[in-house]
Image 1 (cartoon, rainbow, N blue to C red):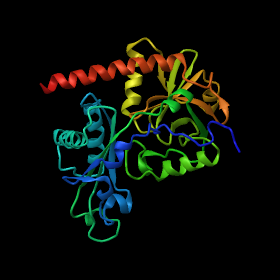
Image 2: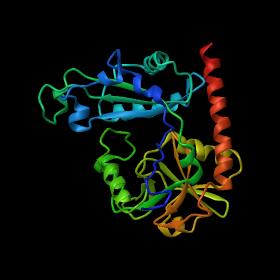
Image 3: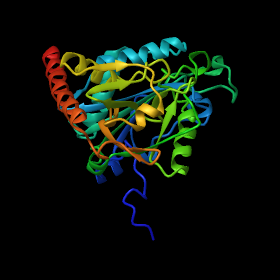
Image 4: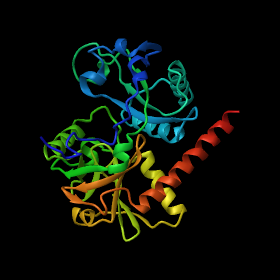
Length: 317
């Protein structure tokens, strides 16, 4: 029997268990229904083809952090694939607020907003067959990131599955078509790690299957160029915070060689904010836990969230 504390495997989206999530209400096309009854048609283009876009957002003190930035990404992505949401950002906000209120949530909550091209007339690919779209679903759960993961970090394994070129399927899309990342995650798990560290088509370090990736070397923060990864909202906030607070930060190409020798490494995402990386391909990174640069960034990020929430409240008065 193994005694490895990592043996069970963890992910950056591990959350503390909350029994209230057993009976949450979910928004499905205008209705709030119990999670056991929340369903879409098997003809839905999202289920059938992965034809849709999604956003993840966190609720702090009644406000959705960086809501405008998330809406910019969502609406730009949908426009790029000719998916008419049929709603304004204000109406999307009303959907999220209605769902959170129905579940008694004001904070420590995470939303997955999903928008697909809708139900199809026949089970085939052509988007013109989606005649009753879009389908809009909002799942808002009581959710606090796992303290264990935040303390001990994530083990990464570099994998053969890569982030592709924009003219294949642009990795900037936050699309329902996540098979590329699912395959990468499976490869990492089969290598005994928690998540995958994915390279770009040229062999440079890019991102993980679920989050954006940063390293710290000699006081400098490095991340990928952004050409082949989801341009995360939290990723950009970290870059901006570094620039505004005298922390050298670079968006650049770097290889596994630099990643293995990093003093620190961490992941960014809306759910976990900043999550330390303990190891890559079995090689411990730094002390194998959260480092001082990441901890400083985490503190700055928390302050930024507070300011953003306060600004949103003031704008709504």
